[in-house]
Length: 355
Ligand code: SAH
Image (cartoon, rainbow, N blue to C red; front, side, top):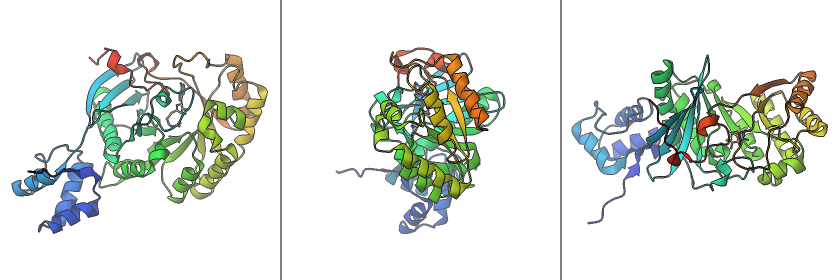
């Protein structure tokens, strides 16, 4: 007998769920009940849907599965950062990181298995993109880290950044779908203003986000405001030149009135001279922005070395002289390969587990 393949129930919208029930001679509001179990209570089995009758639950069992990942490894950094290694339903692996500070706990989530792009300084880029994460897989990372935040730090998750593995704007539909579920009242009800999506800079998609009037923040991984240098660091940038990126960022500000954050690493002999600094200052005039100067996290490639302190200071002073907000970002979770650009599924080889 041929067995019917069961669908992942969380690929269905609320409308789809209502329709499923009416087509099965039940009432549409059952769809709303199931939706709540899935997206508000984050339940991973049909048995736990206690307001449904046995026959309704078995109807669901026959037709659907609730895909979810297992956290098969956790590591805790000396600085309190927690890295989760997640095994997905198809045995692929991604990582997400929970970062506590004095006043916040931030979840750094992944959007793809591997990455579509080719930034030379990033460990994730060395893994080819295997697939996009589904909306439920992005959502579940947030739920899992909210639970961890409550357990280990006694407070709910305060912020979410899409700065884990992958390029979120190359998985736009699923990312937006997940954020809807994270922010809707019928979902987790978090404020979109606590979410930041980081992109390596895909102009067309930045414009689309502006058109869609998303409520979250935008960060752009700039690293150089000089086209020839940026292309060396991020070869895909040849297809997405800085002029187009500048246009898109202007468009974003016109439509959303939100300042953009630039992420920027300064490397010795690569982007640390005065021309680099002046180009960044000019680029920052496009629209209101702030700059995060991020510490470089070595990924075992000798080509890249963090710039000398005085060159980073020179960046800081030049930006401040032009009244551009600049912050030096210390890395978190470096000792467990959990810092920016270090997520590369190495943990299968390490054996440090949480107490
Ligand atoms: N693809 C998205 C989000 C993931 S990367 C993006 O590019 O924005 C998150 C941030 O880490 C980006 O700003 C990225 O440029 C930076 N990054 C990558 N590798 C790094 C490294 N080795 N050291 C420091 N930052 C790095």
